[in-house]
Image 1 (cartoon, each protein chain N blue to C red):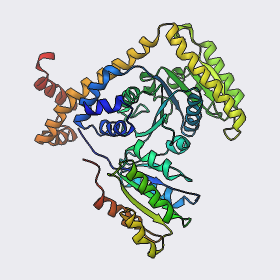
Image 2 (image 1 turned 180 degrees about the horizontal axis):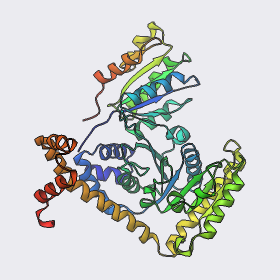
Image 3 (image 1 turned 180 degrees about the vertical axis):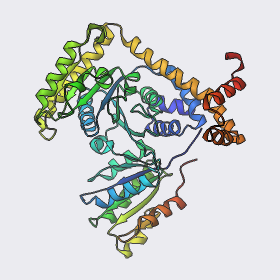
Image 4 (image 1 turned 45 degrees about the vertical axis):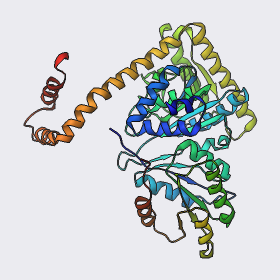
Length: 323
Length: 134
């Protein structure tokens, strides 16, 4: 309860400690998030995704600036990958945003994926809640550098920006399923480089061919060009335009009564995650603790039994009523 | 299933653009299994302390090769103290003459690593002396 009060009062230290505890899955943190949950849902959550080096962090830095000028407070959750071998991680997104470190209206927090596959960290959903209760008007979630398939960001944001750079491949790439389908705004970054007009044209052709049902409430994703980030005048102008477009998109969701359908996805994901955690984890812990797991691993390796039968037996044992 | 992970910040205070060493260390810490936040160069003590609070790290490693460590390192530890951050271990590295060591320890640094130190020495020191918070 003490932590809840502190976070509602805007205490950054309590908030960052809580996010840490959520990442580390400390049981008390779960109790706190239960208390915080009723106060969530006020912030505009913006997802930024795109391939490694596309310029997500630099754009985020620029967007922080634009929203601050409009008097909005900003929280940033920046996700970077965890090493599959050592479990370590370099969380380097922050470097691009350090100029905001002393601004009390900006809270930047880095998270490692810790094995999550969808381009985010497991704790991102809860971390968004924490920043929301902390009172941030805008929450920017920057995914890891993504490829084609990491689309979890759509489950957590109102507005998704997909950042692309010239030279990503031919027309076939533009008709594939996955990341290109989740954009509300496309950013063609580094547009001073060769191939940017071709990229914009391909995106436009892709959108022209999309069925009307692909555009939620009639919103056709915009394609915004951003040139060299080292040219402050044109870069600043491009970011102002993107900020306006993001706000237009949120207004669109409000006008067409679509916030609910976006947040429905989030509710489904959160429920699935929570149910999985509270059913699967205790069972796994028990199997590991009793040493039974080790025996099963060896049996499966020797092909004495298949994993499906094992799983069914275990399910029978623990989930009597459901089967 | 709770699992604590060590979170470490590598920071470069002051007007000093020589960050090869800091980046090598960041990489080495990653390979040691820590989550590493690197601030980049040219940070004020205020920026560093603010980042420490926002990232909730267990360890702060300062790197300075410009000779300004006698001013910058104590400035960081003092700010941490002023903000009531008393559970972050601070260590320092760089071109630090031996006669300055005591002043650094007095300022609250727990260890000093100078050129020639092996990465293994630093990681072993951290694993022995810094535990992720309970």
